[in-house]
Amino acid sequence: MHVTKRPPKPEPGDIVRTDRFKGLFRYSYIVRGIDTDHVSIWFRHHPVDRVYMNAIGVYLQAQVLEPIVYAKLLEEDVLLLHAGGVASTEKGFLLPAYGGTGKTTLSMSLMAAGYKLLGDDLLFVELATGRVHPYARPCTSSPTTSATW
Image (tube, rainbow, N blue to C red; front, top):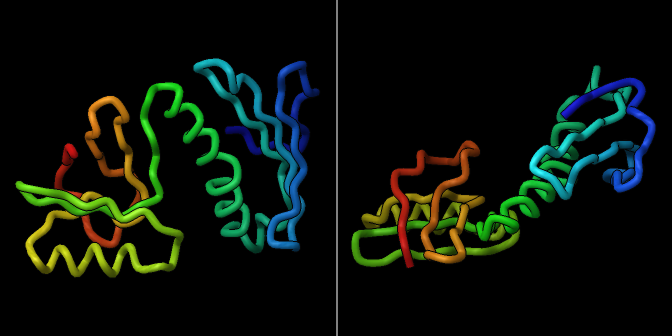
């Protein structure tokens, strides 16, 4: 990931985008090597980063980095699932849902009932085995285990 005043000239196969985010900010970037193991992203410097870096961080994570991570993981038969998850020694639950719909609240309630937290927002799921792993993103509580369904 490069934040630069002048991205390189686009090459054949590059993904070149200019997007308006939240109707306020216009961001430009180039993704190169999406079909390889070495993806590069050039994000054009935006003046708002001096006063509102959070707007850029949210955009980069949700609109650029995570979709690339999702695609590259699927190539390896791993799904990055937007879900909460809890497990006990006998069973586990995945709670796929949109943000703000109660994944964290339900996960915390199930923890109070003795379940261990896998994650409250994003989880890795190995498609071949069904094994679930926490995503290394700050959670409301620390992930404590992995589980197989």
